[in-house]
Length: 136
Image 1 (cartoon, helix red, strand yellow):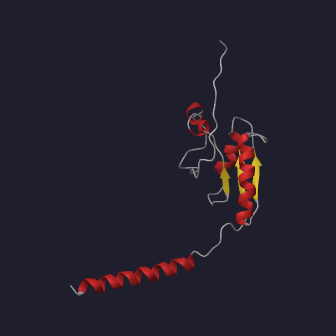
Image 2 (cartoon, helix red, strand yellow):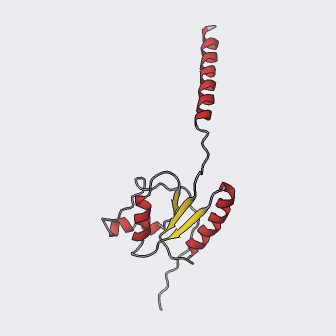
Image 3 (cartoon, rainbow, N blue to C red):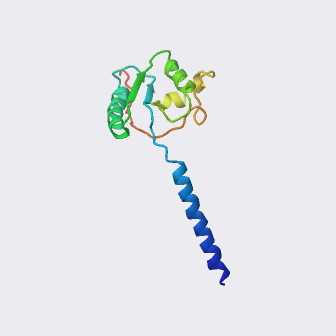
């Protein structure tokens, strides 16, 4: 029975030492350069407006500029190409709609953006209601 407390103390000591060593190894601050946001939508849209409000607050909190880069056109392809070519370093954000994630790859097999491979979802920012109207 005396063996168990000794092993437990050794495990706790080793855990504390490893946590202290890891905390000094990961002391790099983020972000150390501007954060870019690529939006495959025109300026003035609801997504652009929402992201500009978020970028202004994020820039204050992060202490780095948050740059909005609107790349509309070619049915999202200009923005998607910019997103897929960017390095996965955490300095590029984007906003995508549900149809870009779900329907576009089915409609165009050569569409280059794949969920989980080219990008990872971070948060759901807005929900926009859609209305289908027909003449009676």
